[in-house]
Image (cartoon, rainbow, N blue to C red):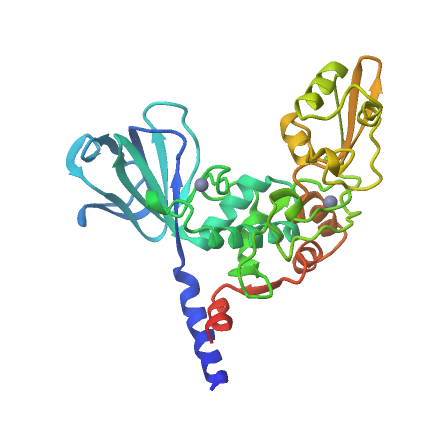
Amino acid sequence: MRYQIFIFCLLFSLVSFAGDKVKIGIFTGANHTKVNITVTGIYALIGDGGVLATLSKDDKNIQLDAAADGVNATLDGRFLGRFKRVMFQHYGAAEFKVYPAAGKANSYIFPEDLIVTSVLNRLQLVNSLDIESYVPGVVEAEGGKGHLEEYYKVQSVISRTYALNNLRRHEAEGFHLCDGTHCQVYHGRSRFEPLIAAAAAKTNGIVIVDDNIDLITAAFHSNCGGHTINAEDVWSKPLSYCVGRADTFCLLMPHSNWEKSIPRSQWTDYLESKRYPVSDSTTANALAYFPSEKQIFFVDSTFKIPLRVIRSDLKLRSTFFTVHQQGDQVTFIGQGFGHGVGLCQEGAMRMAQLGYAYDEIIHYYYKNVHLVPKHLIWFFKFD
Ligand SMILES: [Zn+2]
Ligand SMILES: [Zn+2]
């Protein structure tokens, strides 16, 4: 019986791979009131459920502007009407561009569908697309150019896992994820690095789950400085798969070391504001601080100053640093860049350079996780 269910689920997963749409709020920080849109490929332009026009060339210009009770649509200078919801529904391979009437132009190209509504006299633009079309855009916007395909596979699996694990972040606004750092940065499809689309396609549908077959919180950071740290030491909540471990792969990478100097008085004033005693012998420990390994608290847990708070307050690159006094200055000499939880990106880049496969890299940084096709989660969890 279980075998039959497995076959059924496998067939179901193969069929439904093509149909997982995500709705991404685009230009969410921009507050556009008027935009022009051009398309490449074939689209139906739909206003409140009725087809207004078929669009097949990029020389047609559709202008949309926000009104209090809807969206005004104009096609090549001809007013089409005011609608609650304007949709660009694609047929086959099709893409659109958005040109804001005010503000800076951009050259982003978005695949698949666009849904436009008016919210508080502003246009709300939502790109509705298959998650597999979304992933390469995120990987390029977040990860940049010039890396190896195996590293892009790691980022593809992480971005896909993150997206599916956070589909309710903007539920109240009517879309799944925004296009900013709050969710994952997304500027339309990838345009500069062909390896990214290949890497996303080669990991099609693969996500990371924990021992309970739950999608993981796939935390990552730029460079751990030689040792990743436990999730609970940064966010108070433990994650069984984000457990600190030594990492030598990132030690000679671009963000492995940093240095920052501030006036000694600024440092002692800061410590005083945190109730650290600055007028007795413990001051010396704050001016010559050399932890031998990663710590959670500054100097000693009795003072209750978490290093993550110092990092945030003084805008330091990491919590892994020493403090030296030099005259009326103190210098922080540190390692790594970022919170240090989960996957170390520069370590992962180095592992890819050394020939490790993407799944080996993921298993190195996340403990006891599994890589599975996303639709098989349902089979394992609910069988
Ligand atoms: Zn968001
Ligand atoms: Zn590292």
